[in-house]
Amino acid sequence: MSHSVLPMTVNRGGDVAVAAAALTVRLGRQPVLHALDFALPAGQITGLLGPSGSGKTTLMRTIVGAQRISAGTLTVLGRPAGTPSLRREVGYVTQSPSVYPDLTVEANVRYFGAMHQKGKADVAEAIAAVGLGPVGRRKAADLSGGQLNRVSLACALVAHPRLLVLDEPTVGLDPVLRADLWDRFRAMAKAGTTLLVSSHVMEEASRCDTLLLLREGRLLAQLTPAELSECGHSSNLEQAFLSIIREQEASDGGSPPKEAVTGSGDSGVTGQHRSVR
Image 1: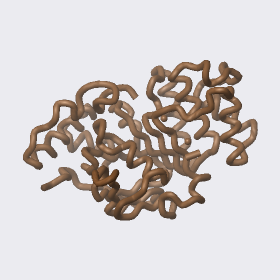
Image 2: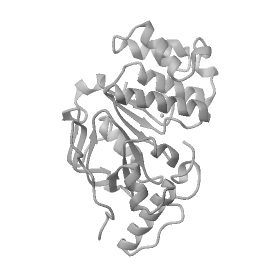
Image 3: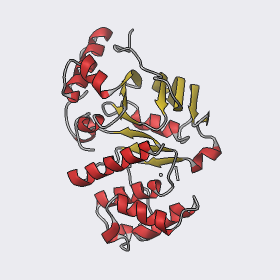
């Protein structure tokens, strides 16, 4: 059975921050990731796209060392994933806020910054980057859900990690702040940080340098947004991705599930859009 309908662009040259070879992950006896091969270029933004249940969060957890590998290899910044020394170099923002509710915004960011020997200027910069300056002295418990997500992001940004893994980081944010954050991500990449960002919002895919397309734990392709548009025969990235999934379904002899790309929220790819600290 064929599981790839597009040529893989595994390595375009230059430094590689994350490299996987036949990466396989099982939860119990259930396979979740199936023999993935890919390479994330250093100093670039890679978007991770796929329907709910495609294995995006599992892949991210594996990269940051929070999920055991069943087979294959995964190298992160030149070391095996999960190596203790990586904890100071990898930032992870999960879908759920990871902050202390009884501490203020400043105290939360200061606490995580202290783990990386960061000072007041770094704390202030991280808080400003996520637009929380006006509520810096409020307790996390008194913030809205979207603000809590931004506190988690600030706690990851303060460390200035070499690799930043973001699981739907812009969920619940207004368009202006979302655009500001992507400007921040782009500036980080230009400064040398490697970012892996998952999202259900196809507009955000256009902001990435490369894309990983996952479906049912299998890698459909690694390509650029322009290549996605070309291979999917549409300038609309959402329609291009849908076309690719349908082509893959046809090659497997099945019919595309109705929820594969359509829908909203966590049920598909088009819905709205969270440190290892």
